Length: 168
Image 1: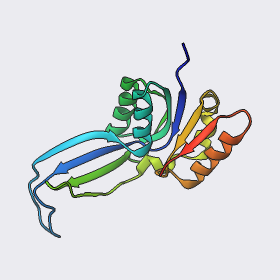
Image 2: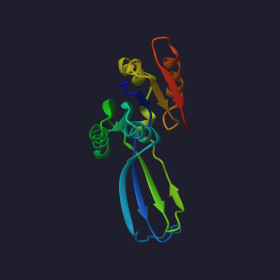
Image 3: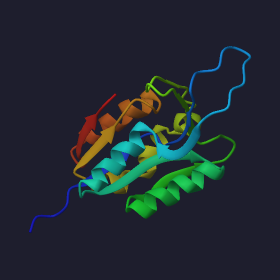
Image 4: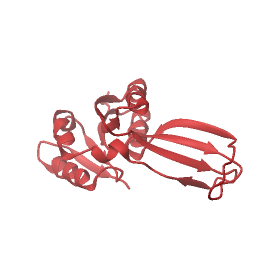
């Protein structure tokens, strides 16, 4: 039997705040929505969940805020079976959020507030070096600082590291 692939995702973790309504409000207008859904998202977190659901062992390297969404995000990763030991809770900044407004025809408007995702730095990659060196592939995206993406690519190219994949 072959071993499971081991994948690291260095990237974003958001909480999606989705409101469904009949129409978007005009400037200064308040409307009542039809329904609301709170879920976990962010391109990095979505990649980690997808890899885990495909059977890979996954480690997530991310930053979340020291707020009600931060610990909930860590707990969600753990519940799914993703190694969240490299997800750092950062004081003084919110977790990443994405308020999403959806009309019945599917038209949406999204505002991403990167929050703690913007604090993921090369030092966080170095702090996760042992875990990153143990994986087959590192997956990246562009919801974290570009210098961290570039640093991670260089880290992965070192002979003792692994392969890297990037999506936008």
